[in-house]
Image 1 (tube, rainbow, N blue to C red):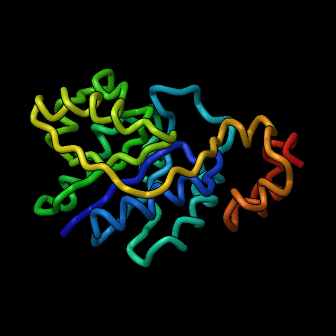
Image 2 (tube, helix red, strand yellow; image 1 turned 120 degrees about the horizontal axis):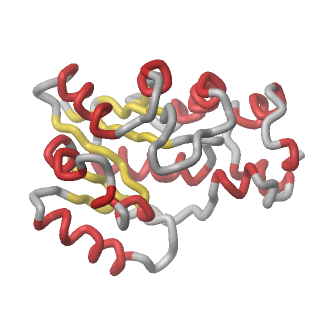
Length: 200
């Protein structure tokens, strides 16, 4: 069995996330692709959007592939969400599975600052999707010390979709752009819970 972990704050999820998940699934061909919104990510300020709402917005990912399932484990667990604890849980639940974890290009470049990063390399193969055009050389340079430390790093080949949740929250997109960037049911939930009001 192959398990792919696709984590993030998803505040909100958007077309870039959908693109990255689709690319990782096409590369890995997992039996289960587990989308897991973070509780309180250690590298970011805690989201002002309730975890239950971010979890509900993640229903959009089911449209990517039948293997996708949504997990609220990190949110329900409470406290800061360290990837080490999540991968350890997956290893205990499916001890014989091959584990893969998606990593954005920005995260790959700071991976050696992650909590117990050497253990993460033991627990999962990293799957990297570019978030910027023409960053392949920089990403391969960032991957080199991780491979030298015993890790495995795979690179997807999907085109880059440039979109940032922070820009959506800050109201930097027009309504027409948002219509292209936000998959259902995200727009409905944004309106229902009055999220990021500057975007409307």
